[in-house]
Length: 259
Length: 275
Image (cartoon, helix red, strand yellow):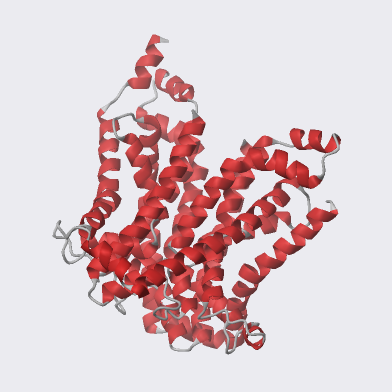
């Protein structure tokens, strides 16, 4: 390592610490300062516990939906051919690009009170599932797609010509190669859903015991000048984020070893 | 050969079923709702867009969002390119940990980001806040806080684009330049930067789009003061809740157009380079 890169590393790590690491540590430290009893009381508070349960349940359900729909969409994008496919490519990235508050407004236009479909999902717990599904849509697709593109069709054809059914070929040939990408996409989509806030503001109405999620509880604690309470729920969410990072790291390492 | 040709294009009912499912899912979840926002914006011609640009507070909110996004993107670009070079081209203790931690901002809730920044830079009882206040630097409830929050949430985007490209181009050319007597700076400007420029462009476009649209983290740190620290995304919420839905739709339309154009540019450049 040269002297220039040494100085560069120092400056970069200092900035990263000031911006990300120290503030995130402050969340954990504020929680520990409040003590275990305070932490436990905060997260078992009836309203907060309900919000956390709804958040985790909706995140799990949406992640499972993404595993199936995301893999299917990736398959369509890589293997299928039809006019207008390029448009689908663009549509998939929209949930990433849209500001979350706009995402909420967008969903409200089809599933709100003026719904042209007659589906009134706003202000119900369904709105949470809907918003999560929207904002996490691209994760599995974009992880699986490049892997699928690189897979050799010959292996599948060999399996098929040896008499394997389509389902067997999928299960025995495709699925094992796609599994790490699907897992990584699922982890990212779960983490994103658990912390989601912006898309819910206008859509869910943030009704206690009905459509209120964990991040809304953090915000109300901040607004009520209760930083220890806010930090407790935030620490719980941070643990989820860290867990996801670890899962991703392990999965990526496994893939690197195999490749 | 003929047989494999047939298999490649064989389309059973399952193929069509999956295709219909994928199109239907994307139509109901994304395409239709987005189209509705566009039509809502133009329900009464250009009236609501004019209303956006004739309200000084909304114009100020748009300006603030643009400024914060540009500053945050500039910071993240310099930081991102430098960090990518370090991660790919040098060896140091704790590299793997640092590389994993750099992805953290993408999976942290925006509200947690806001809370974390308030706990450290809050003027009243943050860790560094009172000291900075003493020096006359107000971070929280002010523009620097908005910039910090924006830079936080979009931090890894440049790195994620540049690192794989740096790995791919290898070090032969750089070593050749260095052995011919070029300085580290010359090598960076003449050899490294030109070969990673597209990755940097993608990273910058994605960072800009993400920065412009940040809502949750900015809401916590900004205080949302009308005409001062209200950003465009905060204005969308405010206008919608104040029964000015048409203005909310118009601002949303503006923000959405910028981000959709941004991703369209990136995917167009990518597909052109792939061929």
